[in-house]
Length: 87
Image: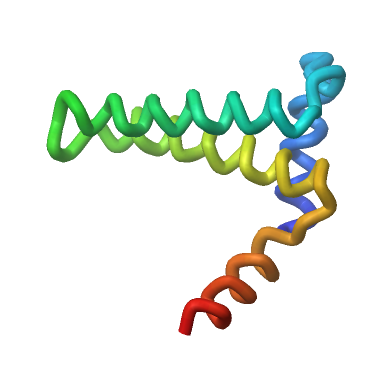
C-alpha cells in the first residue's frame, strides 16, 4: 500500500473528525454504500460520465484503504497473495 496515499487518506479523515468512526463495521457499510453508487451509475448509462465514475471509484478505494489500514492489512500484498492462491 502506498504509504503517501494512505497518509493522505488518514489525514483527510482526521481533518473531518471522522476518526471516531474507524470501526470495521462502519467502514464496511460505507464501502458497500459507495459501491452501490457505482452500480447506480451503470444503471442509467452503459458508459457513465467519467468524472462521476472516477469520483465514486475514488470513494470506494479510500474506504477500502482505510479498512485495510485499520486492520493492518497491506492491500497490494493481499491481492498478490490472493492471485497466487487462485492460480
